[in-house]
Each structure stands twice: as structure tokens, then as C-alpha cells.
Amino acid sequence: MTGHRNSKGLTGIAISCAAVLACLTLDIAKSVEAPAPRPAVATALPVASGARVAGDDTQTRIILDLDRKIDVRASMLGDPYRVVLDLPQVTFNLPPGTGTAGRGLVRSFRYGLVMPGGSRMVFDLTGPAKVEKTYVIEAANDQPPRLVVELAAVEKSAFKATPPDEGKPQLRQTVVADAATSGVVTGTASATPKPNDPRPVIVIDAGHGGVDNGTVAESGENEKDLVLDFAKALRARIEKTGKYRVVMTRDDDTFVALGDRVKIARTQTAALFVSIHADALPKAEGDAQGATIYTLSDKASDNEAEKLAEAENRADAIAGINLTEEPPDVADILIDLTQRETRTFSNRFARTLADQMKSVARMHKHPLKSAGFKVLKAHDVPSVLVELGYVSNKDDLQHLVSESWRSKTVGSVAQAVDMFLGKRVVSAVPGN
Image: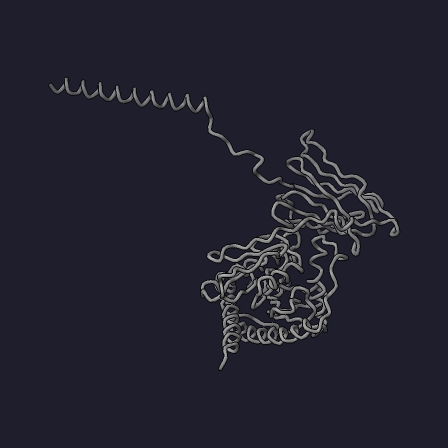
């Protein structure tokens, strides 16, 4: 009996195994007949793996190594002389230090995202030039596809800049995220504020971005990344209170023009605009340290403030924008009066911010300064520019990359915002 039961059991197991084997064979056959679809290679961004410059002061060639052919649009800008290459969005996988030194007609160059779907390379020239040819060489002999731009020197009188209607890409369209998530407004600043949200709007401006790296530390950290991390942390801290709606001029590695940053604050009827940066000094000018808070003024408070403002105001030129198209400042008595009141509020917030920050962060020996920063020129929005520290100073840089330091400093800035706006709300209520 026992042998009979074992025989039955073995027969059952054999049948089960045969059934499983049949299923597996069928599944394998199906997989051979209809392989699982693979993601299309086209969904990945083009990759630039190398960039170099060859030639002399009369003929210079720019070469970009790619993993596929791409379209390119080249334009020329003057004052200063630049070549601007507009590309589809590209992943720049270039060696560190690429672009810091040039050759021939190219003094140096930079690259990065300038809008969603669009990248840009900007080449600073040693003098006037023209683009003779732009073409792509197909992959051959184990060499990748190459984008080539050939430049030739010209006399100053023969230099021709790209007409305003050509070669200037439209910056990213304004996008306003739902208030339930986070406010992000970037680019052309044409959006209107959310009508059903009565909370005061705070615009946080992470300086630089995309093609504009800002200051780069000797150890490789980019200012644009450091200040974006800080701005995001500040947004989270302020939104946690539920009292304010926060709008970011950028929340990724995208370039936003200075004028658009100002427009975002004005379009959103912001109660406060805070621009975040991290300073640096050339080695020849010594070693400064500590955080500094800047407000707008027609005359700089000192030479250092004036030089910093000049450097920050060059952001648009760095990103390849034609500065000759900037509209002149509007001279209006009502705007002037509003701006005076706004500057008073800006100075008040700067003092409040300095008082809060000094308890957690090292401050500059002269923490309150002023200069003609373009990004602070919204005449009806209290605005400050905060330099968190000097990336050229080892101790400051150590703080800037520290999450602990960032958390404490973000808390002090959020506290200053709450103190400042709380006072304004109270003072606006009749009877107070």
C-alpha cells in the first residue's frame, strides 16, 4: 500500500512538473515572438562629451563632440563680442575646467541650460569676428559626431551683430505651480497671481543658473547650485508656517534673465523679494568672510559693493543676451515716490535680517551694504540681496556646503521674514 501511494505521488509530481514546464516553454516562446519593448533611445538627451577650440587670431574653430547629430543656431553679439550657440537641451558631460581657457579668437566659454528644452554655449571673443560656417560631421573611424563652428576675425567696422529678431531664444514660458504644492514662476513672468489666495507672496530668487554658473570655488562647487539648495530649503521652511505663498524665480538649473526676475516679483504683487547669492573676491583683493545683506541704492556704499553689483549685473551678458535691447528706466514722479517708500521697507527688512542671521551665521564686518543691483529694482517690492558668504574663503565654503549650517541659517531668514511681514500687516490695520 505504501508503495502504491508513493507511486501515485510520484505520478502527480511528474504531471505537475510537466504542466509547469509546458507553461515555461509557452512563456519563453511568447517572449521570443514578442520581445518586451525597449525605451526609445531618442527619449534620452543628446550628450556632449568634449569641447575644444583650435586655430589662431585670424581663423578659429570650435568643436563639440556629441553622441548624435543636433541642430544649432549661431549668433553674434557685441559689447562685449560674443558668439552664442543655441542648441536643443544637451547633457554636458565635459571634463572639469572646460571653457576656462580659450585659444585664438576665443578667450573662454561657458555652457548650460537656458530654458526647458534648450541649452546654450557662449564664447567670449578677443575681438570682432564672424561665423563663416556651422556644420556637423557624421560619426566615422571610431570618432563621434562633431559640431563645428568656424570663426574668422573681422575689422570692427565690418562686425555685424545678429538682428534683435533673430538668434534670441524665447526664454521659458511662465509656469505657476498650484498653491497646494509650491509656487514656481520662471522665465517671461507673464503669469498673474492666484486670485483666491490672500496670503502675502514672498519671491525667493536663487541667483545665476543654467549657462551662468556664478562664482566657482577652487574645489569645484558652483555658486548656482549652492544658492539653489539654500533657496529650496528656505521655501520649505516658510511654506511650513502656512502664512505665506512662496514663488521661486527658478527651482532648477535654468537661466532666468535679471529683468524677468524683477518682473516675477512685480507680477506676483510680492510683499518681499529675497535674492540669494554667494560672493567671492579675487586673490589680489585679500580674503573677506561672512554674510552680507545688500539693498538698492544709486550710489554704492563702498568699492566692494560697487564691484559686486557690476559683476552681478553682467549675468545677462554672461548668458548671451543682447543688452542693447534693454528698455531705459522709466522716469516718473509717482514711481520715484513709491520707490522711496519701498527702499525704506527694504532697509528695515535688511536690518531685521542681519539681527536674526548674526545669531547663527558669521557676518561680514560690514553686514549692511547697498549698490545698484538690477535684480533689486522693482520700485514697488521691498527687495534685498543676501550674500551668504564668500566661496573664496575656506571657512565660509565649509559652511555653505553644510546641511547643519544651512538649516540654522534658513531658520534665521524665515524668522526675519515673519517678523518683517508681521509688522507690516499689523501697521496696516486701522487703530494699530
